Amino acid sequence: MIPALPKDALADHDLILVRHLPATPEAVYRCWTEADLLKKFFAPSPGETPEAVIEPWAGGRFYTLMRFEEHGDISGEGCVLVAEPGRRFAFTDALQMGFRPNPQPFFSADITFTARDGGCEYRVVARHVDAETAGRHAAMGFQSGWGQVADQLGALASTLND
Image (cartoon, rainbow, N blue to C red; front, top):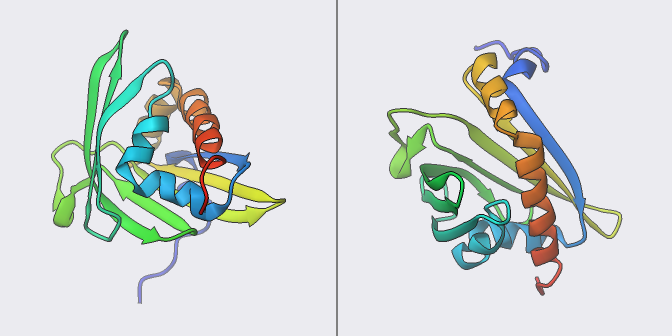
């Protein structure tokens, strides 16, 4: 039997964002798992996401191409780990679709959606291999970038009928 790690054992490896969104968990989940919806919120404005492929099942492809005037194109090829409608969505760039290893992984995202106060508690845990990589992600603007994306996501999800 493998012993469980203490709850905070890897806390310095994780970045966490929590927001209350004015939409149902089902609508927010749809935005993460339907490519046409994801393209509307995934890049912090004024960036855009002209391409996305999401196969919402364990082992499915998670691909995005973001475009920024100041940074150019940034693509990500990953793998869906968990897809529980209206509850949880997790993906990683450590793996490609079909659980094939990626040569240079950066992080995994574990996103949960919980009905709360007439909307959705939206929680993102970005997991990294070590504290240094988490620090790099924080310095890149994790809180502000993912926060802006959460605002864009909430605005989009609030327009959907589950």
